[in-house]
Every structure is written in C-alpha cells, then in structure tokens.
Image 1 (cartoon, rainbow, N blue to C red):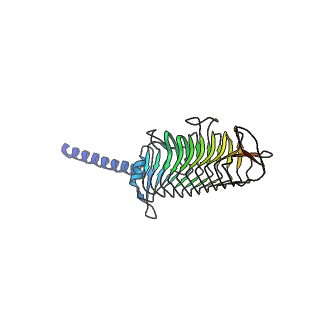
Image 2 (cartoon, rainbow, N blue to C red):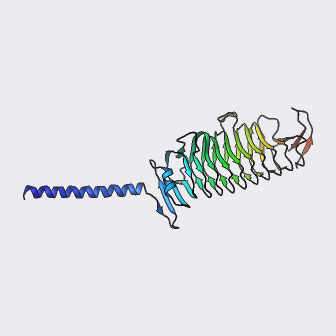
Image 3 (cartoon, one colour):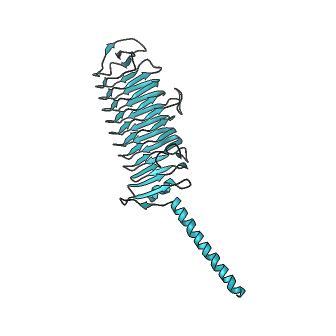
Length: 326
C-alpha cells in the first residue's frame, strides 16, 4: 500500500479517536455540570457543583424553579430577585457552605416574594446579614448561620416562616424590622460565652416595629439580650426556652403581646422580664424551672398587664413594681 494512503488512514483513525473522545468528555461534563433542565411540572431545575456559580444558576433558573447546590465551599454574595427554591443536596447542610465574598455585603439578599432557602451553612459577613429578606412569603429553614452581624434580617417582610435554623455567634440572631405575620419556630440561637457577639452585646431575637408575629418553641441561650420587643405589638411568644441570658425578655413600648408557657431562666440580671411603657400584655404559664420564681419588673408607665402569681413592691435600682410567678 502506498505510503500516502497509509498516512491518510492514520489521519482518519486519529480524527475519529479525537471526535469520540471529545463526545465522551462532553457527555461526562454535561452529566456532572448539568445546566438548567425542566422538571415534571415544567419548572426549571438547576444543579450546582463546586466550581460553579450559585448566582449564575439563580440567574439562569426561571421563576418558581429550583436550584440544588451540592456540597462544597462557595464564596459569593447572592441576590435573589425572583421566586425560587434554593436548597442544598438533602442532608448536606454542614458541608454546603456559602461564605461572603465581600464581608460588607449580605450573603443572601432576597428581594422577591416566595423564596425558599434551606440547608445551607451561611457565614462570614460581620457587617451585614447571612440572609437579608425584604420579600414576603419566604421559607428560611434548616440553615446554619454564624459569624454575621445579623443571622437573618427580615425587613418589610411578611408571612414568612423561619424554622429549625441554628443561629450561632452573630451580633443579632434574628432581627425583624417592620415585619408582620411571620412565624419563628424551633430555631436555636446562641453564642459562645455570655459576652459573645461581634460588639459584645449579642441579642437572640429582636423585633422592632413588628406586629402579629408568632415565636414558638425557639431556644435562645447564652446571650447578652435574649428576646427584645421594641415598638412591637400583638405578638405571641409560646413555649420558648429563654435560658442563661443576662437580660432574658424585654418589652419596650410594646402592647397586647402574649407571653405564654415559656421557660425563662435568667443568668445575671435580677428580673426575668422587664416591661417599659408597655400596656395590656399577658404573661401566663411561664416557668423558670422547678421551685424557681419568675420576677417581672414594670413601672407605673406599664398598665393593664395580666400576670399570674404574687405582686409585691421593692425599691431595687429605682424599681416601682415587681411581680413574681411560680
């Protein structure tokens, strides 16, 4: 066979090998780094793997679609401006880490309604929030949030659910501002050491100008300020454990709240509950533990509040009236 024909056959074989190899590599990469595709309900689904961009997946996924993030470290500041479900691969919360690329910006900044964020380890923004949400109808569940200024910050956000989150070592664990009809349930909020927090005054749950919210079965512990309601009315605190905080529960300019069936075990301050210029609140069924009393301080500017137990007056630190319940 002439040499020229042999060379042509060799070139053809090499070309075929190249084409087959390229197709194989493409198929493998497509399987590993699958782009957006349609689910059974025609909503888009995007899988994100280490090395991919979560933000790009958010941008490429159609409204009401799902972004599934696989375990890895993702250094990004994310903006969510459409209704989406953003979740980690099930059971991978600890290892699916979203860390602020810019520590002076929110890790997740949610501006859309009906956004779900679930199953992430979110950290690293001492100046902003792990999750800042100004949309309504959100679902923030099963996340770990640590070493942020705010763990979760709801701003003008209504009808959202915050559940089963672990919120540790933030300056403020969960902050609601101008936010109503939200549910905070079964969250665990704490710090390492009583003076922990980025400014040494860490707060567990802080409501400001926020009404008609329900705080249920949360555990708030080892903080400077456990729960603080300021200018917030018609909220319900039920079956929470407020434990070993220096200030346990404070109501300031807050009316018509229900504080029911909570365990309030103080650490340093003399009183379990403080009411300042707060009217028509109900405190019933609360306990500090077996054979231990709850002491409620309130001045004459707090009127028509309902308590259980024994009322008495002392002259500690300029106090007016103190109330005990067992």
